[in-house]
Image (tube, rainbow, N blue to C red; front, top):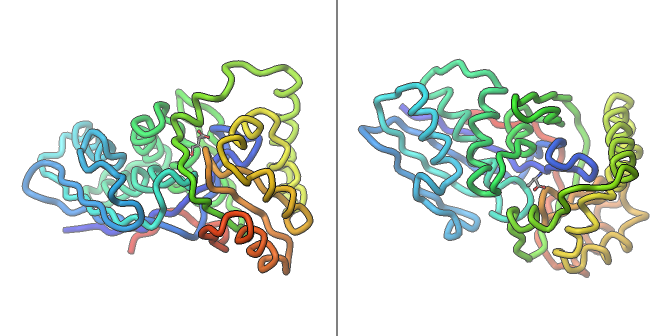
Length: 297
Ligand code: HSE
């Protein structure tokens, strides 16, 4: 018996929502197949950047999730994990999250565990601990729920979900940024003014989703004064792209810990946007939309 799922890329933070906001995308995605097997956990990885992904159970984000679920539910069988990466690792598009969330989702189906979405997020975030050093859930939550999600509390974990539908463009400059390092450069504390600024912009974003006001969403998304100023230094060309693209987009920001960037395009401007991205980065660009999360194939 086997279960095959597609697990999508996600864009975390979205500016002011560091470790809180996340958006599921329709593309790119990983394909994950779990099969019951005689004993032990085996992992194989192919596709985009597969050579960079450890296949050791304790070091692989899907492996850790499968191992924990087997332990907690006292499952006597083994599991064969086959991962086909469509999402480049270290891209800021939730590559590790797609594999861990896909594994949690597929384990639930394969062994009929009846886990809630929130419990799946909890298991999947264990995978994030090993790749980022903290079980941040802002990528695994949208992978599991689809649409837009907010991690309103860690410990105990609380996730809120808003289904939304709009177009996005994602660019993946050919630069490596490790999530761990991109977290280490952030300050431990921030000023009261920065807190007021970011909470204000985050409120504007949530309001915009209910009003279907994509202009307001993009404008507030660009208003982060805490994280982006540090991380933009890790992405050569980012500030140049931001300046050159400003009249063509409702918003642009770093996707997750980067180097990917997420853009909310204005109508009819996609080809101009692609030209700017090509001029500065000549990198892969996805014209996609908000997605509905993990699907069984
Ligand atoms: N919230 C996380 C971070 C997302 O920004 O470090 C990583 O993709």
